[in-house]
Amino acid sequence: MRCTVFFLSFIILVLFASCKKEITSIDFTSPDTFTSGIEGPATDSKGNIYAVNYQKEGTVGKITPQGELSLFLELPNGSIGNGIRFGKQGEMYIADYTNHNILVVDMHTRKISVFAHHPDANQPNDIAVSPSGIIYASDPNWKKGTGNIWKITKNKGFERLESDMGTTNGIEVSPDGKKLYVNESVQQKIWVYDILDNGSIANKKMFYSFKDFGLDGMRCDNKGNLYICRFDKGTVVILSPEGEFLKEIELKGSKPTNITFSNDYTALYITMADRGCIEKVENQL
Picture (cartoon, rainbow, N blue to C red):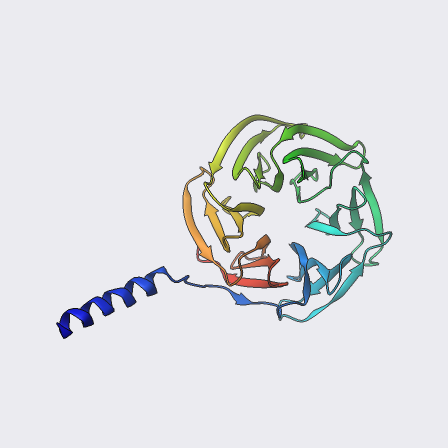
C-alpha cells in the first residue's frame, strides 16, 4: 500500500512539474520603471532600446545594451506614444495615439516634429516601416471592435488602405518588403497582404488564427519569421514565413505588448504591461 501511495504521489509531482511554465526570460529593466502603457519598443543602430511611457505617460525611455535606463524624451502637447520604429536615416517615428499623429524625432537634436496627422484616425497604434520608407499603421477602435490600416508618407500623409476590419493591432513588413502582416487582437487572427510597387496592398489572405487570448505587437526577424505577442497568455509565438508554428516562448509576465530585437537578432526584448518593464530572451532560432 505504501509503495502504491508513494508511486501515485511521484506521478502527481511529475505531472505538476510538467505543467509549470518553463520561463526563459529575464528582466532587462526593473519592474514598474515604466507605466502599464509600456509599448514601442525599437532598437537603434547602436543597440539602444527605446520604449514609451517611462515613469509616466507621454515619455520615451532609453536603455543601453548594458541595461542603463534614462529618460530620452518628453512628448509635447499631451501626446502619448505607442509604437516606435526607426527609418532608413536613423530617424525615430512614434505613433501618437492621443493627437492622431505620426511624430518624427531627429536623434541628434531630439527635435520632435509632426510627420503626418489625420483627425479621422481612431488612434495610430502600432507602426511598421518598409524598406522603401513607407510607414504602415494599425488603427483600432476598441469600443466598436473594428480597425483600419493606413499607409503614411510625407507627401500624401495618411491614406486608408482598409477599413472595417477587426481590432487591428500588431503590424509588420517582411524583410524583403513584399508582405504586410496585420493582426486583429480581439478576433485572434493574423492577415497577410502583398505589398505592391506603389505601397498599396492586395491579395489579402488568412495567415494564422488562434483560438484564445489576445494578440499584440509583432516583429519579423532577419529570416522572415514572425514573432507575435500573446497578450494575457504571457508568451511570444514564432511563425515561419509560410505560417508554420515554430515555437512558443514563455515569459515571466502575462501581458506582453510588443517586441524588438538586438541588431544581430540574438536577443529579444519584450515590453510587459503587467510588470511595467522589459523582459529579455536569448533567441534560439
